[in-house]
Amino acid sequence: MPIVWREQMSVGIKSIDEDHQRLIALVNQFADIIRQGGGGLGGQSEGAVRTLLGRLQAYTNEHFAREERIQDQANYPGLKENRTHHAALIVELNRKIERYAAGAKAEKQLTGEELSAFLNSWLVEHIIKVDLKMKAHKFSGVW
Ligand SMILES: [Fe+2]
Image (cartoon, rainbow, N blue to C red; front, side):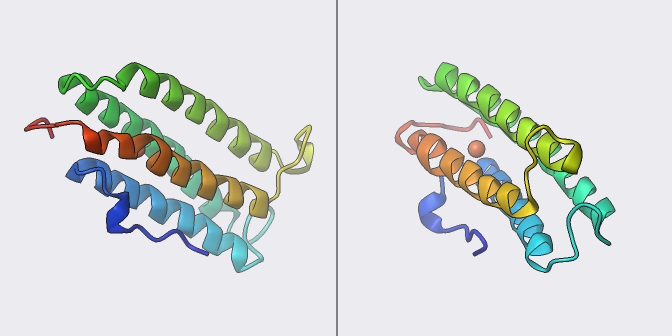
């Protein structure tokens, strides 16, 4: 099931919502490739998959940096907690992608389906459990 962005997922800051929509699109694209079969590593779309995952990693870094910048400018009380959370999420994301990308050479192999399931919960958890708390804070004119 692809992730569908809904209004309830809005944190009330346009640039952050747009980032989340873009991240969701990347995660859904990966799921699509895996679901279609023949994709993934060793398949026809190996190049596309590697590019897509690279883009996801780069965009995640960009997004977290933007979020922290906005929170910092607005003296958001959850900034410190979010920084720690973001750093852990990036480590986890990179580790999973490395395991997947190493294929059979990985110490503990991760399939495309497993990576896809991880990405879905990883992203939804970030948006729902962490970012939605931003709704309660007043951000004004910082984005
Ligand atoms: Fe976010």
